[in-house]
Length: 468
Ligand SMILES: Cc1cc2nc3c(=O)[nH]c(=O)nc-3n(C[C@H](O)[C@H](O)[C@H](O)COP(=O)(O)OP(=O)(O)OC[C@H]3O[C@@H](n4cnc5c(N)ncnc54)[C@H](O)[C@@H]3O)c2cc1C
Image 1 (cartoon, helix red, strand yellow):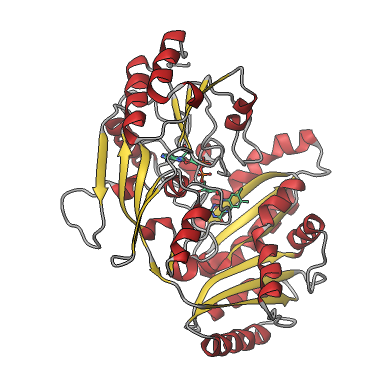
Image 2 (spheres, protein in one colour; image 1 turned 90 degrees about the horizontal axis):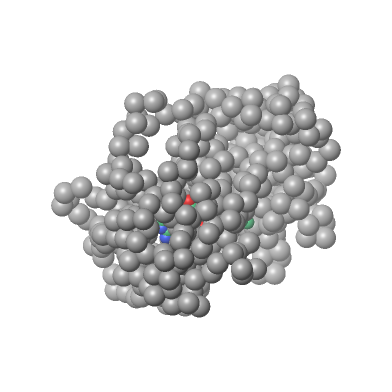
């Protein structure tokens, strides 16, 4: 039952007074469609009743106070690049877009810190930070995501082997509770043992606890050189088996990605160019960062030796900036390319790194059992396996009947190997029903009670994360 109230003309006028007419979008605008979906291939569209675009924390506080008093559902929205339906307004209500909160407040070069509003694009922050010779190394593939969205989903990406994920770079957060209360936790300091630290709780909360408005991020010094190795293998199993051997080398490896040939073929068609060694069934891509070419050449040699001993066909090292960029683009374009091939589902199960080969093997057996193709790529270096359940050519009735069972079996297999349902995309609306497969009921209840403490009326992003 919908416990929420619709947006009345009176509420609309109040919203206009808070953010200005130009920044309130209603159903008469063609722009509305953009706010009805994210990038999840399966999420159904839901239109909000109104989209508001405040540009200050105080205005966000006023909008929330109004919505909370009137019992209107509010869906916080960043760049809308999420892959699990998190920003889709299931109840209509208000979409609270953070897009105008887009100022980088400060880059403090002495303290290695950036203070940024939540709506700053990841690509803009990276550019600005690098212009100052510093580095924000977390690299989830989509640069148009907001920093606030990255924090709300605890985004990971391609350089987690050395640097970790968004969580590892957040020093402080300013956020607004559903009541309108503004809270601040953490700051420009490295250590803090002063009562409960609320910031880590908001990281990965997917808009269900508070609206994140400002983030203080740790930066590091930029290493001047990087290398890319592209390693074709004679089987996926051999490629994955090489991963722990590479990780043991103690080389400046920041990312280790894997791709199956089916994924590479789809990317080739999307980019309209041939990718080297495309006849091989599987590939690893190693990303190295270091102080200079010499260090990286040594590291590349060690990785090459291990890979050849593990069954690699060859080790391809692109020469020159252009060749490197072109090859890196192959990994960056996985999602846009797959989108054009219309997958049914995109899963991002995480397992202990040593279990990737077993996990992918079991997924392949399940795929054969259900007769639904599942192809794999992902962050081999951190155990985050991206599975693309492909729908092309599959009978609609067949996948409608079997898909939920296939997904359940895949998640069960991942959890049984010590993993989790989602490593970086979050649960949103699309994966929430599988949560009990991974987390005991009493623990889910504890989380729900925490949510209630933050948002007693449950207006923030309702029907997300927790099963209905
Ligand atoms: C091509 C492509 C490649 C991608 N590659 C990766 C990858 O490698 N790694 C990875 O982790 N992800 C990846 N993603 C997924 C996506 O970019 C991330 O999940 C990203 O963090 C979402 O940010 P966003 O600003 O677009 O958030 P949205 O999609 O707008 O929202 C995501 C969730 O966060 C909440 N939210 C957003 N902003 C706020 C805020 N300020 N306060 C409170 N809640 C908020 C929303 O309510 C929603 O629940 C990829 C997506 C695409 C399209």
